[in-house]
Every structure is written in structure tokens, then in C-alpha cells.
Length: 404
Image (cartoon, rainbow, N blue to C red; front, side, top):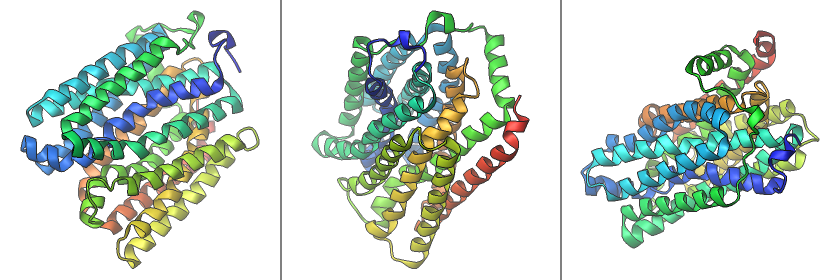
């Protein structure tokens, strides 16, 4: 452990809980309102494309602001940046609950996106501030294990709220969730970045730091591989309403049939990695993750082409893919952040920007074209997993030599 003076009274599991709570806002903000897609579209006279934009614009705003929150937290500390972003998130959620037009909903979804990115970026930086080596690997795995609860329960909560009080209740719930996370941060979360570890927020210095990151071959290979891996998983999150309503002919309260198994895979993979941290090198963990990802993707294509779509046949390969993604994620994150030990906020910001920005492209551009068939969704997953493997292989062979 390093910088122990910054977090003298906190157990690693508490830091993992704080990081997970901050990261949970993102999946809750996406998954909770998925069961309400038809109701929102009917109430606000929104087209299918406009409903997809409520996700795409949120993700685009999320991605862009991650590039801001990293340097801000490197300059002013982790706590004040998180607190300010959470206040904005609560405002955006209340605005979405009160809006009467699709244009208003799109605006307030952008506000939610502008604020939710802080938790992911700053949370990852907090872990590397306070822990090093396999300790950081283990804390990130524990955080992923706790965080994985969110996408499992979010659509179930959304379905219940939709049945109970309509889609506006979903956004009131998100506002209350933001208040709860804010209370935890204000009450107990530590400031993990000491004053002597902070950097200037001068635009030229920030631009220089980002330029250095973009020129760093190994770092960019790691973050791009991470984004591609998760993109294969995110296809099925963004396409969930079409998959469940149109292909599997399920109802508004059946989203758990997709999300609970997938999250079970995420949690199992995170747990396995946390147990192996310190006994398995990050590159070996990543190689195992890719072997499982490709096996899951090929199995997914086979079932889509050969079997009629059923919940078991369609969702079983996704569980293995989710396991593989969460097994490799802490290793890719640690290796990426270690490329810039004195600018972890900036490094975490670039990683989050790549991941969420790519998710926005998946939701806004890819999913509308491939969601009409189960086999095209499966091929999309295989293509992204294969691309991630190619990028990982490239950076392993050439990235280290090309890095400044």
C-alpha cells in the first residue's frame, strides 16, 4: 500500500465500496429506464430513434466529461470533484422526472451524462492513489464485484417502478440514489490525493498530458482493448428492449432474465480474479480472459444460427462472456494506470472516455443496425472481441517498445 497517510482509518473493502457506489450510478442511469422505453415513447410521442438517442446522448456527454474530471481531480483533489458532480446528477435526474417533452428528456439525459462520469474516473484514480501492485488489483476486483449488483437489480427496479407509478418514478428513484451516494461521500469517503501529489489545471499542461497519453502506444492499446471488450458486452445492454420484447417475446418485468445471469457472470469473474490477485500476473489473466471471450462469442454465434431464440440459448453464452470481461478488466486497468503513476486521474479519464465513448457509438450507431436479428447481435459481439484481442496482441508486441 502507498500513500497510506491519505486513508489511515479505512479498510480496503470500504474503499472498494466507495468506488463501487460511485461507479453504480452509470449502470443505474442506463438500465433502470430500459423497461420504460415503450411508455416514455408513448407519453412523449417519441420515435424509436429518439428513444435510442436518450441513451446515446447520455453516453456521449458522459464520455466527453470524463476528460475534464480526471485533470480536475488531479488538481483539486478527489472529494470536491465528486461532490460537485453528484449535485449536478441529482439536478439532472429531477429535471428528467419533471419534463413533458422528448426534447426536455434528451436535455436532462445530457445533464445526467455530464455528471455521472466523475464517479467512474475518480473512483479508479482513488484506488491507485491508495494501493499498489496486487493490492490495487484486488481492490478493483472487489469494487467490480460490488458494482456488478447494479446492472442486475436496476432493470428489475425499473420494471417495478414502471408498473407501480410510471416512468417518471424511475427518474425520481435515480435522484434519490444520487442523494444517497452523495451522503456516503460527504460522511466518510477519504481524500486519497495528498496536496503534494496535485498538478496544475493550466490548459496547456492538461493538453500536454493528454497529448502524452495519446502518443503512448502501450497505454492506448490497453484502453482500446478494454473498450472493445466491454463493447461486445454492451451490445446486449443497449439492445435489451429489442432482444427481450421482440426476439424473446418477454414482458416489462422479465428484464431480470437477461440481467441477473449476465451480472452473475460479472460477479463470478471479479471474485475469481480477486482470489488470484498476487498469484497470477496481469498479462496472464488477460490472456485467459481473451480465450474465454472468444469461446463465448463463437458459442453465441453457433446458437444464434442453429437454434431458435430462447432465454437459455441466447443468454447462456453472455454469462461466459461477462465472466471473461470482468476477469480481465482489473488487469487491463492496473496496467493502463501504471503507465502514468503521477497522472492517474488523467489516465483514468482517458480510459473512461474510450470505454464510454465507444459504448455511445455502439448504442447510437451499431445496435440500431444489428438488433433486428439474434445472429447479427452475436456476430457483433464476436467482431468486437476479436478486435480487442488483435489490439491487445499488438500492444504486447509493439506497444511497450513504442511507448515514450
